[in-house]
Image (cartoon, rainbow, N blue to C red; front, top):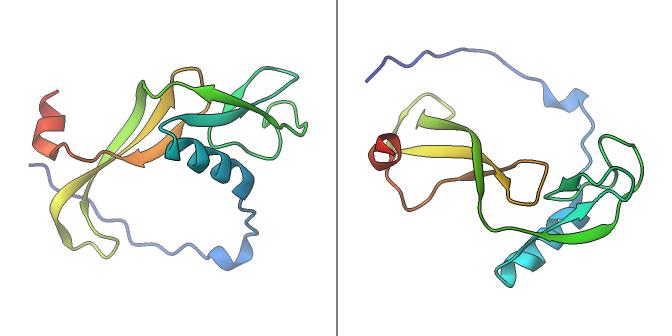
Length: 123
């Protein structure tokens, strides 16, 4: 296994303002209860977001047209987490990934569950 590099740094978050887009998360979670993924499509450019933001990131217009997207997708990026936030080795490596769901233009982030790191690495 390759050696892990550690970068020591601080990121002061108190200077930033955050806006949690709860409506899009609520729409997505309600759909997930039914076994579906839901997002929002921009009426101007057609871009589909999951989870849905308040406005289109391309057109800067408010968006609110709910759409259903596929439950399959393409892994666009992934990382294997070998240590916790303090640098302590984890008992089992964690695979975090970004997926572009079928019928969606944005990516959603999650953790790959039920597949060990070694098995994921071999595929």
